[in-house]
Image 1 (tube, rainbow, N blue to C red):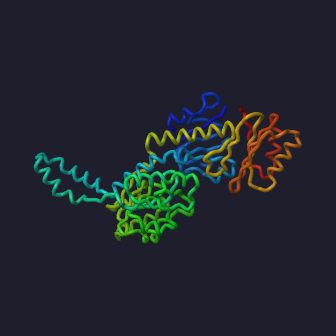
Image 2: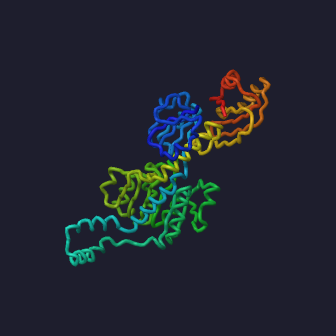
Image 3: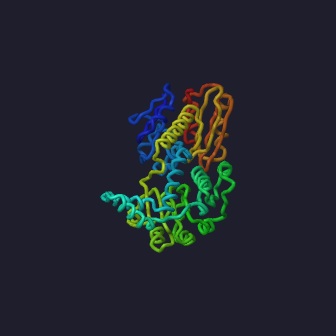
Length: 391
């Protein structure tokens, strides 16, 4: 019986993806083999010795102690792309609001609720509407920083709106390049993109090299009056520098999904309360993807969309399967195979992959491995852990 402990409210459509037989899923399970969560801040104590995997129904994993999990041989999954459309639509809403003072106009209209004379109301509206005059997006230039699942969708939508779109992503994958419309002009560096763009939208992960990337120097390369949109991660923007740029007029507007006390008082800074993935569809998509990844891992050892382990997929055909996790040290696999050879056990099929300091092996054996056998493998100095599979 596989036991999956949940934190937060997980969409029912995702929970339904776990097989009815052989799986127990819920918030109060002890001795769980896996954890499924959304925003819960996972502590080291909650990653108990029996946990083999943690799946976050979302893209970011800043609420998961990834380094600790790696040390313990725990695979950490996320769900990249599952909330991409939800974030894209919120970004487009911000793009439109950055172009037209829709909110100011609506707030003004609210003040007219006590005007009952239609002629007077019409005169007031006509006399004041120039205060909320904006500009069209058509023909303007949109700079997209990060051209992954979300950024590529935003770029395509910008083109659909008649905008010129320039993009920058030094880590663009082959799959990402195929998703990207040919009309998007690739820029060689960020200053060039900033100088060309009327609107800049950020879609990069939070990494050491991206944290604080939009600082005072970067903002100095913006076109005066350009708008900045951040629906990626709060820490990639130096919010103090943004406030200074808003005050000086270098930055025309700042829209983000991350409220900030200092920025809240500025009339051209706008924030939503972490709404990027807050749609029913996004929550369901993330939950479904996380559940499917956990199921495949728990039953067969396959790994997809892990942030700390290599991607591994070995079709299960016959025999008995073990998974060996080890530090990526030369000679470890040879020692594992020597243990099997000494026990006169034939290997039917196997797959070995590594990522940074960790290596992961799926090995199908002709005979069922005993606890004594897996114990001898675990005794190898560089081996982190061994799993046997019931299926």
